[in-house]
Amino acid sequence: MTTLKVGIIGTGLRHGTPGATGYGMAHAHAAGYEASPDAEIVAVADINPVALKVFCDEHNVPRGYSSADEMLANEELDIVSICVWPHLHAPMTIKVAEAGVKAGKPIKAIHCEKPMALTYGDAKKMVEVCDANNVLLTFNHMRRFGAPYRKAKALLKEGAIGELERLEAYTSNLYDWGTHWFDMLFFYNDETPVEWVIGQTEAKGSPLVYGVMMEGQGLSFFKYANGVAGLMVTGSKSFYGQGAGFRSGGCGNRLIGSKGTIEVAVEGGPELRIRSEGTGGVWQTIELEPGGLHGSHLHVEAIADLIDALRSGREPELSGHRALQTAELIFATYESSRRRGRVDLPLDIEDAPFSEMLNNDDITTWPEAYVGANGIKLHYWRTGDGSKPPLVLCHGFSDNGLCWTPVARALEADFDVIMYDARGHGLSDAPDEGYTTKDHAADLAGLVKALGLEKPAILGHSMGGSTVGMAAATTPELFGKVLLEDPAWREDTSPRQAMSEEEREAWVHQRRDNIVAQSKLSRKALIAMSREQSPTWSAAERGPWATSKQQFSPNVVTGRKSKPRPWREIAAAIESPTLLITADIDKGAIITTELAKAAEELNAMIKVAHIAGVGHSIRREDSMHIWRW
Image 1: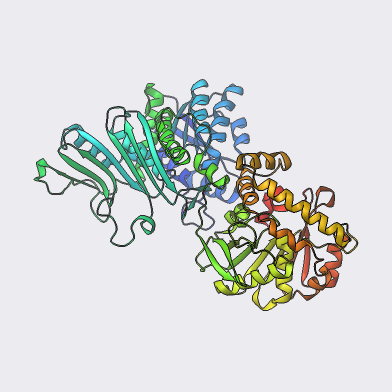
Image 2 (image 1 turned 90 degrees about the vertical axis):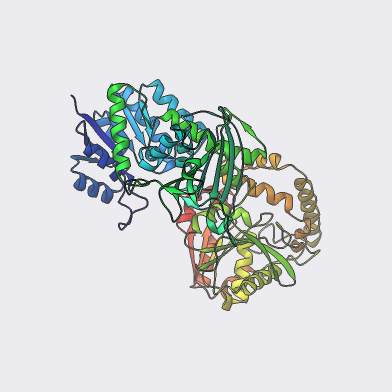
């Protein structure tokens, strides 16, 4: 029998080792191939040279590549394991399936980590492309091989709990962990398709898992074609177990029949137990070999099943078509939450509803609150609980706090990020007047005091940059490091500064009229406007931007009736280490090269970082720089 040649994309480092960013699932896949007499790992690919060398040395792999493309071009592979993060599952699977055919070296099978893909459209495409290229596709829902799950199904088939009526699952989220439990419910119910789903999700408290935002709490109720009801409850105990907590839950899976109940993965209890007429109505533990819920042997069995299916021509236990049922149920639950109604299957969407709701500002993951500051109520969103270094973000003219969403996402792991709505913006108070830079700076100082923040770093864009500069200059004792993203600092000779009183008054009236007219547009129209005006922005920018325009008070323009304090006086008074971030004038930036140079010469605490190729909204036009600031 010919030995199957195996390649692995994404070696990773084993969980817990220095530099590891995940569980190093490739090592588990490798164990499966190493246990099979029919397979040999001949090549692996990883962009991390350290992880690549460690893997090759540990598993005696003869060839390691720095890219998947290079490996596919140079090797004749029969099976490819894909062990990268979810956002790469679809592109890598499609690449592998098509690359073999194009090169005349067709791949026989792909074994991919779960979950399937970031969108339902991509999940479907993975299956379609593999089918079209005669590639056997499987996903690592390896729990199907666990003794507790298989014994639970056997008891069900034996009639131990009568006729199956309902299947339940309890876990942390629908997407990353839920993919296992949805898959197991299909397993218990013999792959019976689902007819409809009704679900709801709570975004607050959402964790980021392998680069994908999960719901903080969720509920999925669905009906199988054979009349069995399904239920998935997700969230951590901190969200749905307050106080005395639930008396139900407390297990991974529950099979409810007409004559009893089976529970799998009981919290603080056995791996499997049953309560039925046969047990006299009391719980009875089913004795099994230990380690059946999670053991590494499950990965070995998953690989063995794939190889056997490849040899025999049967459908593998972990087939892509079965995984697609699970993906459909996940995305249908999110879609039900988006539609606020029942979703009938087959699912007719291509995107990722939960991600789109976050991008469109329909939901957000962070708690919000109000604080009294400088005589008004300021509304803010906050990512942390005070245990990390504080970072206050100050938005620009007509924006709101959530316009910082992508930046906050990038930084919340390391900082306690506070995104507040300036007066007249978002959900903060909008008094008739008090909108000068001095007023905004006093609000910022009041916010920091009210929240008890200890020397927070402060980052401001445009108007917010001017606010941050003024606050750092007038109350230096309150702040740590200062970052200014193209602040509204202008020379007295600039057209804006050189206006006469009559011209300034006319300009203010015109801006007020424009603000009122814009606020009356629908979010859909505003999002379309942002696409037209700023085509390079990411989708995550558009929803918050549109919402902010509907919330924006025309009162804010009263602050533009008078000239601001000269920027040089402000820059000279800043005592904190300050980064002045500039962009290209010909693309709409405010800070000129001459002004930036003058700022550095004026104050040794100020350093300049120029981002080429972008305009005034630097972070929106070059989002990669949010990681480098």
